[in-house]
Image (tube, rainbow, N blue to C red; front, side, top):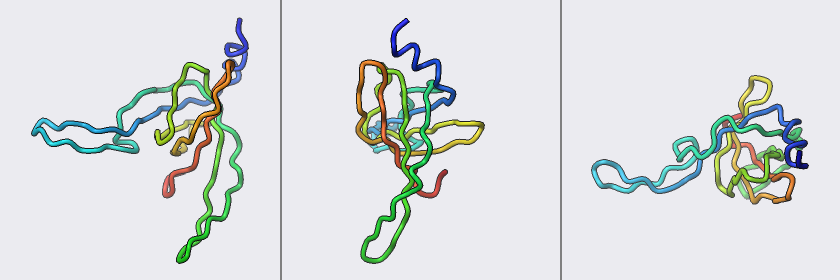
Length: 120
């Protein structure tokens, strides 16, 4: 049993991952689909979602918002890329988030997630 196998035994959550990309419609028109309309690349993949960061205040000239950040832990062979939309199911509740650049380790991948505003 590898270290990745041992860590994976602690993954009580699951995630579905959607990748943005260009799609050609039957009419021949090309459209870019992102978010939950993107191409599903993983479904019900075991994972572990960290506790939320509590949020960071982000100010611009006209508005202020609080972003909530998480970390997602998955097996090393799960390739979640920056810009992917991740739907994590934890204790029956879903969290929709945008993936950042993964920290890849031999035993696991650690992906930063930012909650997609309007969904939580």
